[in-house]
Image (tube, rainbow, N blue to C red):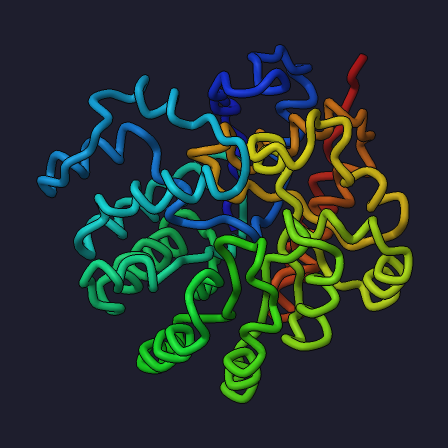
Length: 367
């Protein structure tokens, strides 16, 4: 296992929201969080496509883009809601044209994970987005898988892949994608559900999730990001998911809070994503602290960090600062990230022991 005690990377932010203006963070807190052993459970690999790489790949693959430089791209990262983001997100994926592109994209994310002492990551990918452009399923997953295996050997980072269905498409398309994944079953740990939530309830995909259950996949679903608490209920009761991605709107329903707490259903929260997409006005309004205090199994993640201004450590640092989380609450979030993962129990214990060793040997003295 690699313990990366490096200088924390510079976390630049896109000036698209008042809370995203440059902030001077406490250096001790920044170092504590960056070196903290942790896992990331909610990151879309296509959402790690940084502006520089996007433009480089566009040039290499002769893909036309209306953006001539990174400044123009960053100006475009002004989102009023989820759909605004998705429009540019899907445009950006058009520069990914071959296995090498997916390899380089994934490698770049895993290198950033190494810098932040992320020991395990569960990476979402959207094959329907690429197959609709004529790419083979094998092209997409082979590049991603190759980078993950390389990082396992070089950095000691373990990883799982989560195949996500696009909820704005029909269930028949999801079934076709599940069938295409059959030859790569050993590489895929879970299936998920993402894209436009409004008007696309989880129940729309009840049959394909039932089939995925028969095939032995773990299951996750985006719910309660912009959609109502009822969507979270559907994901739990109809899709039988193991984990809820986002889940912010759970606080609207006391009975749901009780169910999530009693069953310890994990929630993969994404603070900077929620801020950038206007789900909240300021980070101090994020439901994370309230959820922690009510005993929910919550984790912090980066979602689409290239678009939302920060990777995992930046999300933890920003929300911990805004909500004045103490050392024990931050450690709880790190523990939860391993507990909520799809790792086997011996591996979870190994990572949790490593985290406890870090906690025992590291103090956090902040003003």
